[in-house]
Image (cartoon, rainbow, N blue to C red):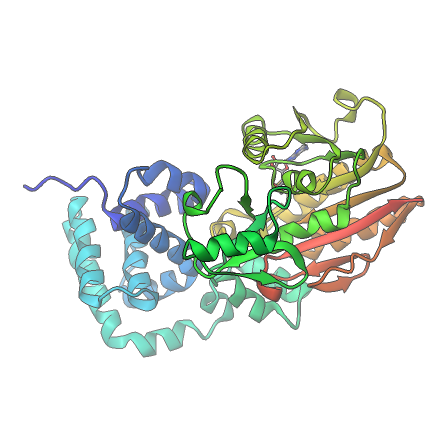
Length: 436
Ligand SMILES: C[S@@+](CC[C@H](N)C(=O)[O-])C[C@H]1O[C@@H](n2cnc3c(N)ncnc32)[C@H](O)[C@@H]1O
């Protein structure tokens, strides 16, 4: 018997998908665990592409499988059910020769000692090739299946965005661009764009996003010129708008209440010599803030704390600027984290909303008169955004909402909502509150 190769992209993708869809792990954590650091970069890229693709289209692929199967697989064969999705994803949406997609997927079942499944998957994938058009037409009749979204999320998006939900769901299944934030303490955007071009990495600027460059092709960060020296960071354009609204001045006391992994804190410090306090409740995540600031040559005070437990960490001196980048459902960044669709539950938004309001209530008293608090989330659900701010405004007579006037998105009551894909950026919500 020949030895099993140490890294088989399809086999590893199956481990990753099982960890996410059955084990409830995040995609990032599962990829970090199963894809060896020394794996061939093409194999690793192929494995990632399968995992992302299956998670984007999980419901649709599952519906195709269930149409073609005569009887459902047993729950102890969930791995083989996912392996069918891996095979279908290659046939439906990937640039893989069909014979390789079938035979290599079947080989994974055989390699795991499930010979009955190997025969079944072989027959099922071949039947799909013959009946492809009819099969896709049938499953695609239902929008929730065609766009692969759980029912609760579809209902919510239809309610919140009656005119845009369909295109929004399409945008969520599209691969996101790789956007950089140029560290303008070290060079101009045009200067860095030139360096990228010289390195064979063309990138374009983004209107209204003064520090952003969008790469034509995503690449490993290690290949970005000067990345280790802090010349640039990877950050979506929508996330870069926080600093435009916060606009800290030199010497301002700035609180970043939910700071990890530190993208927005670093951006604020690239722009101004503010005195920034970065909090995060998660110690391991806070260490990433420290690492990011070190790489960029920036300094801030970093503390592990529940931002709402102000008695435990606040020294009593008000902040001129507060950023509350609140923990949220992440529904605006599903195109980057398709596992969110399957890991989030219907009762998450109300639970998150209560916590968002708790944080806002606790932090508002810490804002100086004339100071500004920026509330944002990477959610596209009204419950976590406009509903939180509207309810807060009812109860805070000294709060005044300022028009965020962002270059992208739409005004929604007090704030501005960016829907995933608007101007090519992630879905985000921003509200900007000043203290009278
Ligand atoms: C959306 S992320 C922040 C992203 C960050 N601002 C950036 O730009 O890189 C939300 C963060 O809030 C943290 N968090 C959740 N609850 C918190 C709390 N009660 N106090 C402080 N941080 C909290 C989470 O650990 C998570 O790192």
